[in-house]
Every structure is written in C-alpha cells, then in structure tokens.
Length: 188
Image (cartoon, rainbow, N blue to C red; front, top):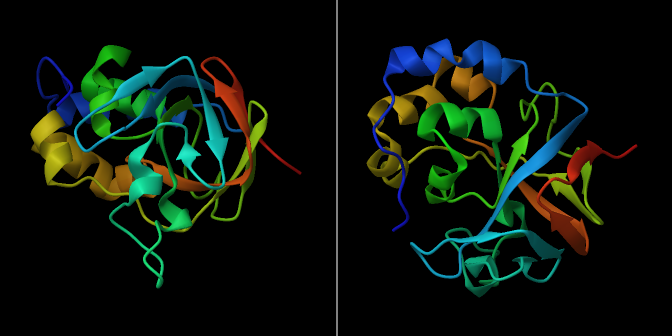
C-alpha cells in the first residue's frame, strides 16, 4: 500500500484548514495529481492519462470490476472517476507524495461542493469531458487506516460532508486526455 502520511492530523488541525479549503476556485481548478489504480492497493502517479467511456482512467482497475456494478454485472459508470479537492487532501495528508493512498484518480484545486458542482454538472478536463454523478463518496475503514479517524470524521460529517471534502464521482462523456496542470472547467 502506498504511504499515506507521516502522521494523522488532529480534528483541530483539520478544522483550522477549512477557510483555505473553502477558498478553492469555483469556476475552474487545476488538476494537481492524476492517479491510476492498476490493482487493489496499487497506485501509479501519471503526468497524463486517457479518460474513456469504456475504461475510465487509463490503466485503472475500474473497468476490470469495482465495488458497484450494473444489473448485468458491469462496472457502474456512476463511480468511474474519483475526484478529490486538492486542498482537502493536503490538509489531511500533507504533500502530494501522500495523496495517492486516498484512492482517488484526480486531485483538483476546485470547490467540489454540491452548491458549486451539483450532480449533472458537465466538466472539461484537458480534451476529455465528464459529468458529476449523484453517487456519494465517503471515507471508509481504509481511509481511517491511511489518514486516521479524525480525518474520516472530518470528511464524513458536518461541514466536511456539506462540502464533499472526501470527493465526488464522475462519468466520462467524451474520450480525451487530461494532463497534470490542465484546468477542470464547467461546460455550458
């Protein structure tokens, strides 16, 4: 399993980070990190990745099967791409070298709250396009093991839950390529 962090942040440290997290850009945000998960517990940091309707993030295990499936057993498209606010993971884990363990594909410096990006919002990332899905993204036992109980409570309750600090899910609507440093912007 990848390194998660040098130490778990306290509830007080995490609450103190809220003003910085809440100041994240609303209309466009930088893609700070791209991660594929070839197998359970494996992470690969990428400078760029293809995003496709058929495979999700290039090299990611989503297309080989995931925790949520359609009625016919295929990986559910509503959990195809995992996206987390870069300011949130920075508050939880420190530097980018500790972010991949969270299990998300994209870490973006952008407000991911439902007030800013409600389900159904269409976004461009590089030459790819995605739509935000309604599937909730919550911290779990693995998140606790990697970042501590306070971090999981922070993202799963109160203001952290309201802001979706654990992240959101998206589904690819147009194949393309995203690169670190690209902007994620609203379409239309």
